Length: 116
Length: 111
Image (tube, each protein chain N blue to C red):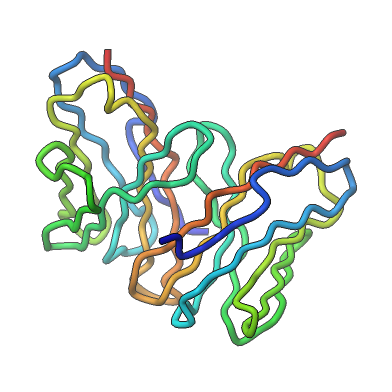
């Protein structure tokens, strides 16, 4: 299957700092990438949808000024958690939808963020 | 409003058994139905997917059964193994739009 690389896989930061998570589709182009947040033993909560070259669309209740999403190219999207607080600690997962073929969705490995 | 309803929430089977996970949807415009497998601390991995033009798809020990009239689809795992213990998510989408996920099923296969 197609490969989506997400980095870093885990990060620990101090409260008030910003953290950037990268999501790359390694062997396909992705016009659309999605960012999810997942709490323990729960389903995937969609945070935002990003399309290459345009502003991300955020789900209701997600602060766009806190979770900055940039989709700079057909293979790269980044999520920056600004002024992180302990309540932002979570498992963040990106996914990329193939631009061609059947439009399958592939996920990254996830990033575990811990804010102290 | 949940677009995709998944059941059961958890499932325990003996090795060799055939766990079945069910999903139901409302939007008849959905045209792609994938299943994902997720291990703890990892991102979901695409397992198998089906489109509405077929009623069944099989890949190895994994089979999707699709009932268009009932708007339901299910995942069957044949000869289940302890290594299949994971959380399984069904999803549905209309090409070009976002994916809607079920709430997940935690499967435990007892040796």
